[in-house]
Image (cartoon, rainbow over all chains, first blue to last red; front, side, top):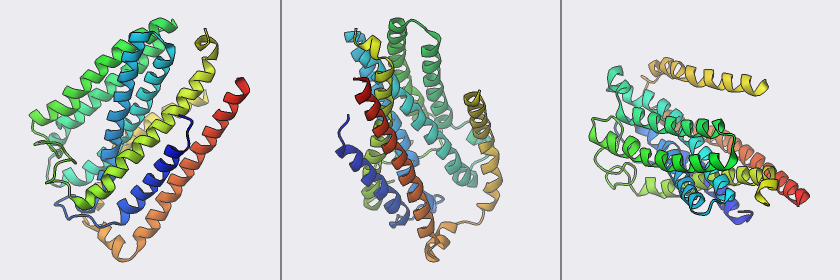
Length: 226
Length: 76
């Protein structure tokens, strides 16, 4: 984690994402127009969140198998940065939707939007994860209970953000497949920036998480050495 | 105390964000402003601003990284 090359790689990808994302030509889309560029920012936040939460659940399972506090520290910090990405994704989505959906959908439709509600539920489940951790003072108990909870929280992501919005009437793109990945919505010009953008933003998240993890290692040094 | 005030301010900001964007939706009636920005070259100004913000944040992260490395060495 202390290696330099992937951090440099991350910075290069992000600079490319922003310059390319704002300046390269994009396909014309109805309603969205130039805001299709948000694919490189808003959508990447959710991809980053999903990858970080996956890392978190992997370490939660590792903790339960090994009872090693190191894995608990990894798990919680990946989850925290994942939540940050989720909140950013939600905030950017709000602005994007208020400029695009309002052109053809009524307020009632927007308030009933299953993708918004689902994402809000998923984030609240993860907020509760932090509250749960904060409420237990015993370290081993906290690690064990929160690792189990992390697995359930991860499982809740799938119905709330993947399945329900596809079953119900949704304003959000991607109801009939995988948004941003299928070939009808996306095209070569978009993918040229989109894929590097996912990697760049995710690496930034991993970088922030790695700093938090190292800080926790210093803080919990006395316990980890036992 | 400062932490509490800050988090409260952040909550308030997030709460008021919808109102802000609602008010701007009216202005969004004027569609395709982004194309105007491209044709008169102002988009480059925006790109430069965003790049500076990104680089500033990255620089901050790098410094934080170095500081943590230093503390790690000291505690060893």
